[in-house]
Length: 125
Image 1: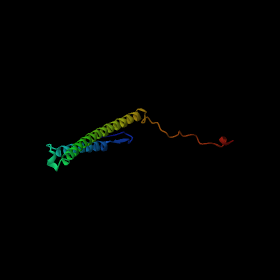
Image 2: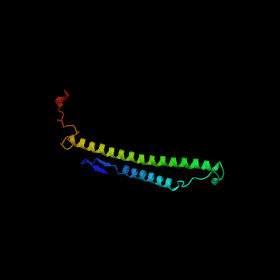
Image 3: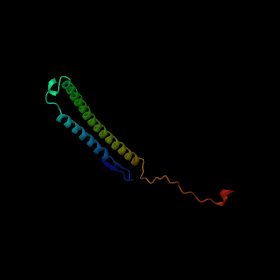
Image 4: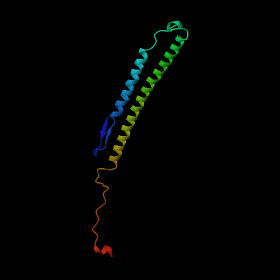
């Protein structure tokens, strides 16, 4: 998204929108990976190598799934926040453009000093 004022003031906010989309897609990818490696069955203690291995694996798998869910949610939340920031920046820039135009920037006003009469010798007495 971009806007431009008549005096060359412009806004380039499309980059933030693109990054928000990348974060959102990364969150989707993490969710797909989490679902792809999700355990489909519970294993008995002996199926994975003994009474210690089965519970250890089950604890690891549960922790991994929880972390993947957290990462997925965090990426989506970050994407939302970047999108909100982008919209806020665009809104603030639009407000600035409106404020600049409402001050009468095109009314012939200038910051240049007014020309003065050339000094004469009488000014140095």
